[in-house]
Image 1 (tube, rainbow, N blue to C red):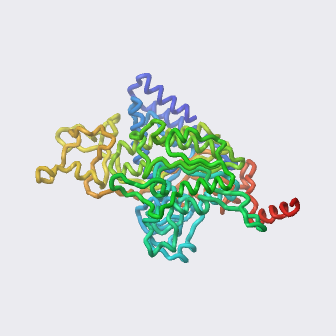
Image 2 (tube, one colour; image 1 turned 90 degrees about the horizontal axis):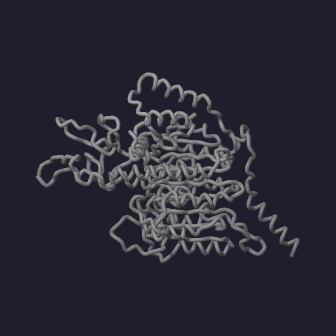
Image 3 (cartoon, one colour; image 1 turned 120 degrees about the vertical axis):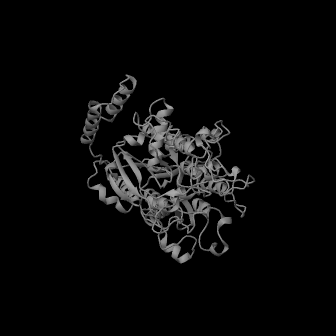
Length: 545
């Protein structure tokens, strides 16, 4: 039925129907109502779960990206199409505040999404007993949280994540890390007084669960028999905090290891010693050489965050797109007989907003949509739950009274009697000085409509308050879902609910039993407990020595 609605709208667009009169809107409403009435709940087991996080992708960003995409295709842009997740059958709203803040950060929100527990701003993988930057080893251990990736691994699923930020950044580290400070990504950032309290996040990814593995030992000989659980896929930026290269570029906020360790090389050797077919790749050409025969792949494609898709080098020596990384990840994870859980982060939406780069933020959002479309084509709604959400919003707003069809990146009006201003503006950010005519010695705003660089992807949209990095927004964000148990996401939810719903739909973790009774599909058999498995292996070895 959704396709019928889209067809109706497209026919109107291309047949030159100029008047959207009463009959038009009655038909649109009727088709949409029939679509809602025809919905049936999918209660199959969610064998596979894919969570897309558009970092900073608030509702205003989704709306603007929808219009931007349509206008790039020559349409009016406001209603003649939808972003693919807007066609999902189930949609809800998510409350994003942190325990201690009305407006959140990505560490606290990422922790909520992936552990099922809300926490303080700036901390990763620990509950609200830990304050940002306060490291008491005993307290941190008590406050450590398990992520859905550990729950999934215990059920026999393959796991991994893809991001366009550093792999140690706030959102990806929320899938595996535990730290009182999100910026402790490398050893150099961990203060001396906290060195004995926690490892840096890069070490946690390589050395600890669920990033590394659970190991089964031969108790008699104390040697490793098999690596059971680990991230099969780790894709993103962050060569510097992982110690792969020495950072020599311009002054940039990026962790540089001072302990001489190359954690990517250690990761590779660790996997090879376990008999796994592991691979470490650093560019698009090397990523293309990855096959489904590989048991584990780490790809680090930038010293810091990856480049914006519009600016990245697209040859074999350059960095891959979010779509390229995600498709490769899916090929690796789909071979798991018990399914998989994958996180995909469009992390540069957030980075663009922080610098008031509205055009780049919309381009990154549309790029993430192409990735979602590819994932939908490679998976089945019968057994794969696809969730698209954000961690928080930003201060960008769509304002004024622009005419329908007006360039979403343009001016809000063309009335010569009024001060011109942009449709997309920010409440704060570094753009303040770009729009202030400081050269005259007077506090005068420049006419944005006359600025020659408005078409530049790095053009900064207006912000009336100066701050080095634009802040997040505190309003609710949306969650879109399709596949098994997608109906669980209808309504208004606390952000930590996402992990609980995923646990239920996938029959793993603390809520595994709640959806089993209504499921119409087979269940994944969890892995046998490590102790029991160890004794079974030992018994087998003793018998056949």
